[in-house]
Length: 147
Image (cartoon, rainbow, N blue to C red):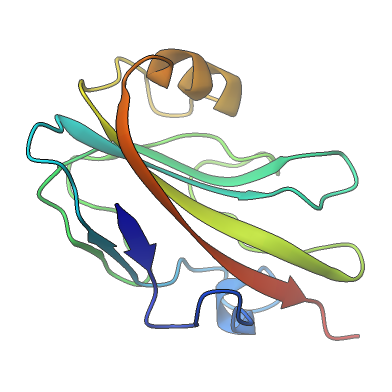
């Protein structure tokens, strides 16, 4: 599986528009190579460089496996969003305290839908997806705050 964005290149700088310093909206994403036997998709955006350890910025599950694009500032119809580590529901863009951080957009094809309520946290999502991933891909961008 592959996930990309038209807003920035792999390993490139995430425009501030998608950060909490800007409009705090999600970038457009493209998904390719979903296996035909996938029952749902799961999207996770996280930052492994946060001082507190892995920081989750976005959790979206039960995405229709036929989805090939997620538009800017949108969530796929029928998908469910979780609570990020700010904590707030839905997308929470980059806002590193200092330095340049890496932000990973991870897509997972699952063999089932996840039976989780909106607002579930990362640990609940991780537990629910365990043993159900049939394919995955990731895409990384970087962000530094302008002082």
